[in-house]
Length: 94
Image 1 (tube, rainbow, N blue to C red):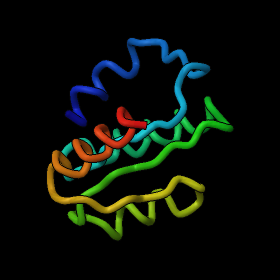
Image 2 (tube, helix red, strand yellow; image 1 turned 45 degrees about the vertical axis):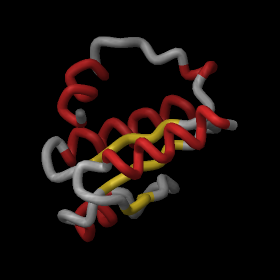
Image 3 (cartoon, rainbow, N blue to C red; image 1 turned 90 degrees about the vertical axis):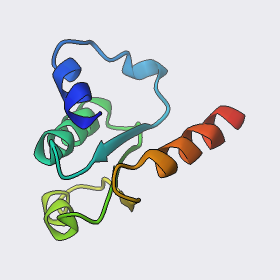
Image 4 (cartoon, one colour; image 1 turned 120 degrees about the vertical axis):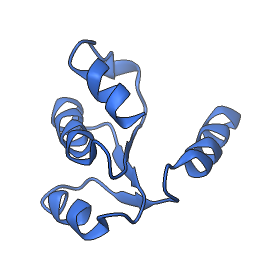
């Protein structure tokens, strides 16, 4: 999913005015790309919250890369399927 979204990110225009919150998953694969995407989206959207959801693989490195930002790093299981699924259900229910 991370590399898939990375492949599409540069090719799509994001209608940021319609987005209330961004969640970006950063696993071991495509980690740097996902974190770079989070930083770029945060710069584009200033007032729209951006959060990174990440497993504990390379946690210290992820934390260090985001240290100079106000982007929260939320821990989840490897792959993030359960965490992100639960998150999507909560958002859709609200």
